Length: 363
Ligand SMILES: [Fe+2]
Image (cartoon, rainbow, N blue to C red; front, side, top):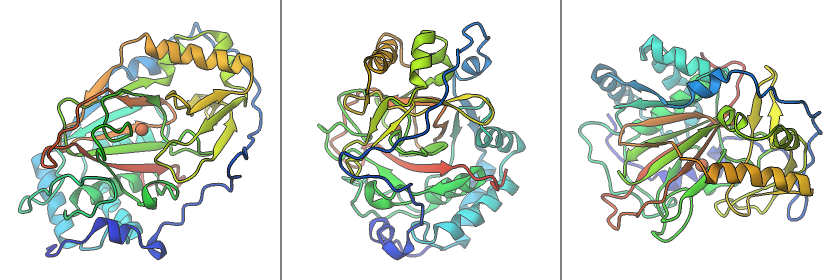
């Protein structure tokens, strides 16, 4: 049984306990990191985009009550703190999930972890806490301590380990392995909450190796906050060949946002092909987050932004117990504008986890 609560913030900040994920060394300030130029290749506009069709709707999978009870029993028996002992927790939980999740779901997760056709999945009806515990109010900002058992944290870490490696952002939100996404200020525009829409982006686009997968667990939903998505394949089917060629040249500066502790940026191509020959993307279309270093690069960027601005934003409303899983380099995401609730008992609360590729993943 978990009998005492611990502060997520204080434990998450213990430097000695941090995961040693290291970003590649980068130059601060005006420094730029150059990546090898990629040869341009003509995109076959005539191909039938099976992948885009698959990504029009999230693949929604329901978790059973039986699994939910078993999972809570598992967490009751394991008292390790996921913010400090995340390796142990992720290993143990991944083993549990592999044994207890239905084969259909394991197959979907395995497909995602291998970069297959599943690019957006929502698991529903997951427990976010033990039945006997109350859910505390949403923290007032992402650094505030809170008292919650670790059911949602265990699940996220287990999933991450099943699909790859839990990935720690050392420069963001105090480098916690699981990040709290909460509105810090009803007027602020951030990943947490805003009256302005959050433009399409891939997570950590300014990193040389952005996470392969990212996940959001909804601890407390808000019926007005919709998470938007748009598949890369769908975008590629709708922009010009010239723009697709241009996006493959390393003529873009990708910049960090206000949540990061650095002002670094990366000079890179926006589109790259992976080992399987599929395009992958890293881009944030929010103002100030990407710029072209040539006129044609700027024009290409504008075409992408114009396309997004002139098309419907498909979205999913995350409810308590939902976990959204995205292939970060194949699917853009964002958020529609919403009014942040003034009471912390009703305010939206998500937990975020990144996953990097691991050839020894458990699936
Ligand atoms: Fe995001």
